[in-house]
Length: 88
Image 1 (cartoon, rainbow, N blue to C red):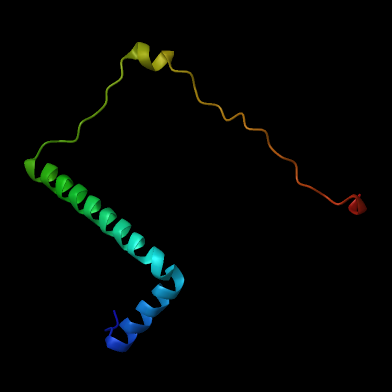
Image 2 (image 1 turned 90 degrees about the vertical axis):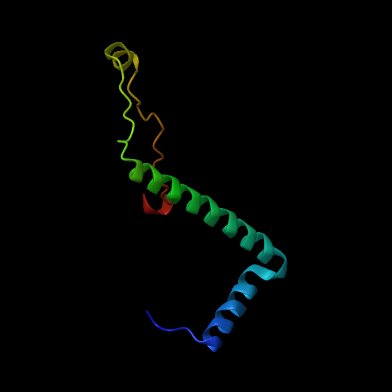
């Protein structure tokens, strides 16, 4: 990975400022901070579960529950491609 020095970091920050603008930048940074905080807590919880040595929970369905569930069928209509009348 290349080493970033001060001029490269300043250039990146200027590009980010131009892309997001001064008004949206604080909201974007706040959202990124929240996302990282949630990700960090989920990773910690996952490592705590692994360290505890407990196997992951398995969902077991009863035979009558499986049979009563209808299969999912995609019934969305398929649109035909549009063609110009001159091509016909």
